[in-house]
Length: 364
Image (cartoon, rainbow, N blue to C red; front, side, top):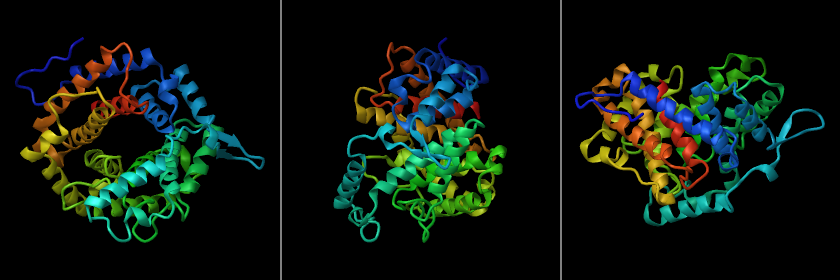
């Protein structure tokens, strides 16, 4: 069924939202949640788990198999608990070095991070990847109340709360230059804090303190009251970084009750909706023909998804008329995926993440 837009409508109708959600379900069922080309990376598993929960598919056999694929990345320990089995974790060859190289290249033409945050001053690049990894892993592990998953979530949280993982001076997670790392971890932490059964075996008070410090650090990292730099050069775009950082606040149960946060976020959103800026993250057309163009679409969808949720809050309804344009972008992307015999968004993580972020927007 084609999603048709009323010429005078400012937003998607509920019927149109339901139609797009049903298309996403059809895509997922056709491809299955545990298809090898989608589950090779932990981050993709995370997106698929979240998507399953949003779409009400957590009771299906393929969801259980997805969790089994995830658990294969861990090895049981003699005295109990689990530890990451790194041989089963897909890592892009020299991924950390590629990230560092992007940061070095950025520093060659931009002096913003010169000094303590310079790429050449990073002493523990492996910790960057580990923080991202544990942030996504804990989100998967809390998706079901199961002894094995509970042990994994305890292990991941202990890693994330360790001194090596956190920036004790400035707040957030290593590396401070990369706000999207902290944002991604905070998204998982907010799911933990909203999950009652986890209080029986996780230290919620420690997690809450880390959450507050992380949010404070993100607010301080807004660049020129406009957006969040990625700090990673071409590895992560400013639009994806900004989307993830904004999402860290909207998923918190209390952050948007903090007027200081709201005032800072309001300036970011006002900048994003300026006429000369909006077309950079809200395009008329989408292009999946190359890896770079697919990554551009991904970043745009992430930011659009988050802003779509913000403009439906009372503080930002003055931007609600953009709901239609964002909805049209969602529909274009879903139609491309629906009409493709084989989804090829250039990376195994890209398609699940795009589907997740469209679903997040439409189900809120």
